[in-house]
Amino acid sequence: MADSYLSAASISEATPLMMNVLYIVGGVAVAVVGGIFYVFTLGQRSASYELRLTLRDAAGHALPHQRVQVWSRGSTPLEFQTDDAGQLRLAQSQSFGASILGPRRPGAFTVGLAFPGISPLYYQFPVERSGPVTYQVFNTYYDYNYTSWVGDFDAEHCVRTQIKYNTGKLQQAVAPAGGLVQRWQAAAELAHVGKQQNVHAYALDLLLQLSGTEIPEAVR
Image 1 (cartoon, rainbow, N blue to C red):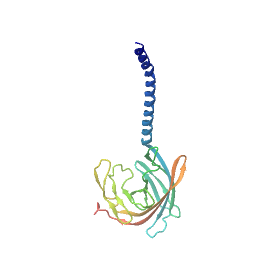
Image 2: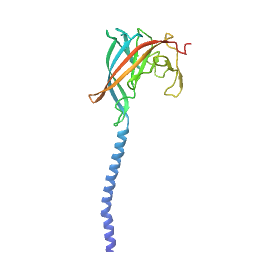
Image 3: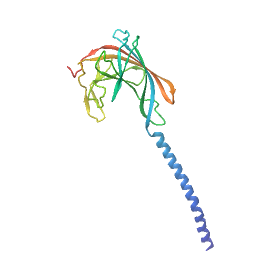
Image 4: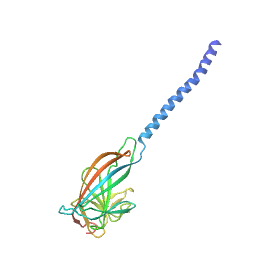
């Protein structure tokens, strides 16, 4: 009987201790899982950049005092003008999805530009890195589903006339307003210049030189 009593007493004393251990282990597990979830959960971050735009004609001469509209989908374009050297500097920022581990910048800085004195079209230059830039052309700045998409271009020709958008549906390029696409030879220099108010900052030099016009297949 004494042995049975001791055994029961030992179990009774051990039970709170075991429960405490379980609570501690469970708490640690929850903290670990929560930490992993926090690390990999995507949130919205932003990166800032100074856009340094230079416009040139087909011969490489500066295009001074040219109207330049800066746009993004759903936002009314803001209008500026190049200086005597055909240049324009603007402070810009772009939001993107990122976890605590990164990335520190969007996959591409998307620069939307229009040049009312040169073309009625809207151009979008996705700058991923330094070098030549292939760009997209639209008839409007409020295109959400590529319904006014004219195609993707480089300095010499159209490089894409079909695209799959969010719905997975194949979208065909449409005819450009005015019937012609004014092409640009686009080249970028992208550099990280540090942090400003805990936001990564970049310098983006974008050189655009006129490179001829094209009649897309949608018009032919």
